[in-house]
Length: 353
Ligand code: BGC
Image (cartoon, rainbow, N blue to C red; front, side, top):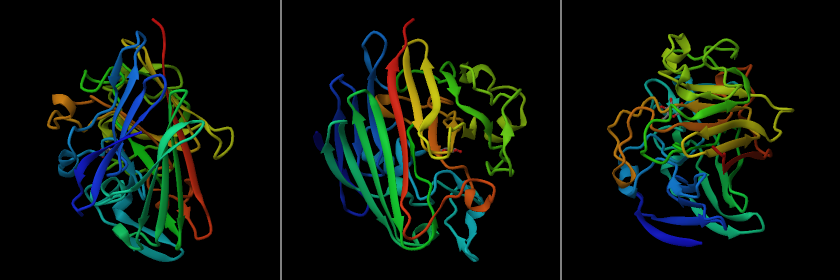
């Protein structure tokens, strides 16, 4: 595995890039700063490789401003309302960084810390073990959380994410990966033509600040019904209260699982012009499908790419938003003695004409 310097983090730690490859020529470039996936080259139906994730060329750009391009998110993916929750009778206040709400772990979430990286190779492929110990009280969270996340690029063209954590006090944990994809190629246009299928009968309706209203909603008869393959853009401009509240798709889909925690199909995405396909399986109960609504052409990405409105989408496998305040949602509380483990598999292939 190739390992190259990528600069120095604000805390002075050296930052590196690790290049994972497989025998088919797929290449993932990962840095130990924020566990960010910097690039991912996969073939199209004619064997042409292109980078299919958004991001920057230089570490400095990630330090200045990033909408979580490629990043590993923790302690809590998505929002916790007003940055507050009560656990075992004790109120906690988290950093707020999205209006009045807490988003993606706060001001310095797991996307902005330097992880210890250990490369490995095994019979499945090659990868990196990323570890980070989050101190008690970091961003307002209780307990020392030891996180270990494994990224594996397999011989059969999948990126596998295994998330592990343990704690010494009860704390919410909801780790995820925030890559923005454009299967036509980074910077090559908007993602509205991507044909998406989601294995979800229900989604989480939100208020205009993207906080769950409470309860789940059936997708039937709504623009959120992706149970049959549908282009992202087919209904995104419909006059629908939920699309208005998310400014497009920015919702958690509740995945149909045979049983809680079973690795199950979450999503299938086809980019018709290149034939590139991404299929996602996860043990998580939900997936945030975000259609890049807040990209607005101000961010300049890799090789001069300009990220206009909806030039990338994210599919973040995780628990449901604001679970610490939503007693009916599956629990995100990890307790001492328990072991958090979550797995998500993003497999790349092509489909013919
Ligand atoms: C959230 C969006 C947010 C984006 C970038 C997504 O996971 O759902 O609301 O704008 O991340 O921060």
